[in-house]
Image (cartoon, rainbow, N blue to C red; front, side, top):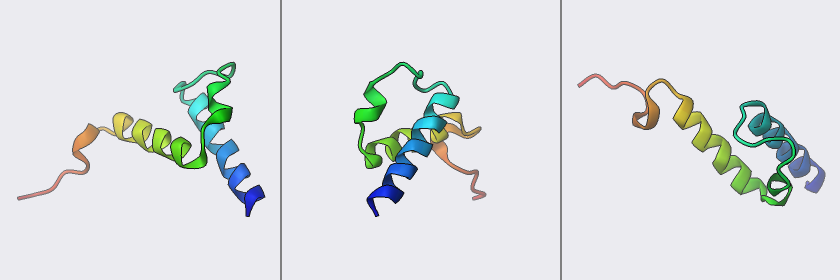
Amino acid sequence: MRNKDEKKRQKLINKLIFVNVYNKEDQQLDKLSLSKLEYEYRRFKLQSHPHGEFGSIQWV
């Protein structure tokens, strides 16, 4: 289980570096928990989504 979580952490770190949320030299990333990395990635996805914080368009 721990190895699986570590792989997931590393994938999220790589994604956050790739999208320039953090840079490679930032040691802070290695100290973040898996849940915090997931939060940071979701936050980035919301900001980069075309509808921003409003989510998807809903017809009323």
